[in-house]
Image (tube, rainbow, N blue to C red; front, side, top):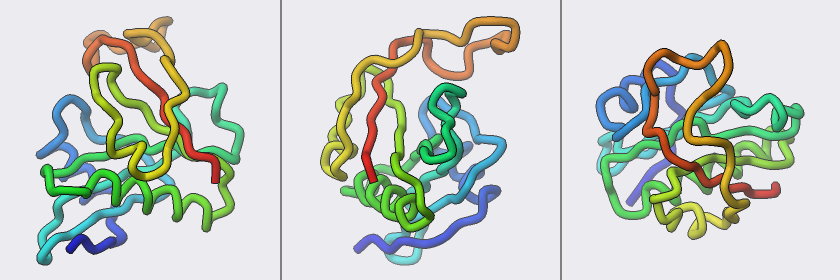
Amino acid sequence: MLNLISIKLSDANAFVAAHHRHHRPVTGHKFSLGCEQDGRLVGVAIVGRPVSRYLDDGKTLEVNRLCTTGEKNACSFLYGAAARAAKALGYRKIITYTLDTEPGTSLRAAGWACAGLAGGERWTGQRRPAVDLYPPQKKLRYEKEL
């Protein structure tokens, strides 16, 4: 059975650093959640402001990182919990992104809807990183109205 816990950003980031396939830890958040199974941390969700300044309207949050060790239902459990927490805090929408090659099964199971392709393959402009921080491919945006 999965149990929801509150978790510090530093602990969530350490979990991401140890287990995420293609993303690094984040620098900030609004809140982080963890899920435990038999007293062992098996997943984290880090929720913050939307990365896109066009979506950062003060009423929307983004799941910036979601990472698990593969336990059954852990991803959908965390996506659902993140949406409920965001709603309880007064937000109206929550979003996240997946690679276009990922199926999004856990998001749909948690009641999120695919909003389609979003953004380009890489960051552009003067502030882009010298080295890609994630796989350079298309992303899909998922949303849930709260």
